[in-house]
Image 1 (cartoon, rainbow, N blue to C red):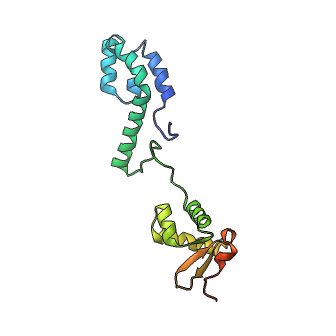
Image 2 (tube, rainbow, N blue to C red; image 1 turned 180 degrees about the horizontal axis):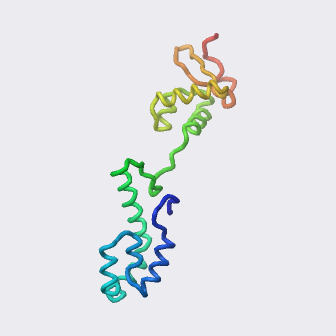
Image 3 (spheres, rainbow, N blue to C red; image 1 turned 135 degrees about the horizontal axis):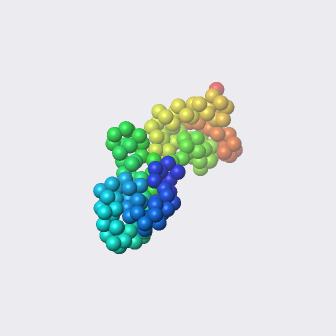
Length: 166
C-alpha cells in the first residue's frame, strides 16, 4: 500500500520507465539513483536488458527510494517515521478509553488506559480528567480507596455499587 506522504510515486516511475525505452535511465534518475541512471544512459540500459528487468522491480525500487527519504528525514531532521508499511495504525487516546470502558462495564483506571493505549499513566490520567470536566465521565472512589473513572452509558446496575458515598 502506498502512503500519501511518499515522495516518489509508482505511476510516475512507470511513465518514466516507458520513456526510458528511448532515453535509458530516466526512471533511475527520478528515484535518485544518479550513478546507475548515468550508467543506463551511456550503455543503453545495458542493451535494454537492465531496463526490462527494472520494469519488474519498479514497485520495490519506489518503496526503497521512499524508505531512504524517510530514513534521512529521521536521521538529519528528526522528523518521525511515517511509513504505513507493516505498522498498525495507532488509535486515539479517546478511542482507547471508550473501548476499555465498554469492555469493563464503564469503570476504568488510568493504569488500564495506559496499558491498552501504549501511553504513560500521567497522559491517561490527564485525558480522563479532561473527559470528566466535559461531563463524559465521573471520577469515583471505590470502597478499597482506588480512584476510578466511570462512564455511565456503559455501566450496568450491578456495577454501580461498591463506591464511597459523597
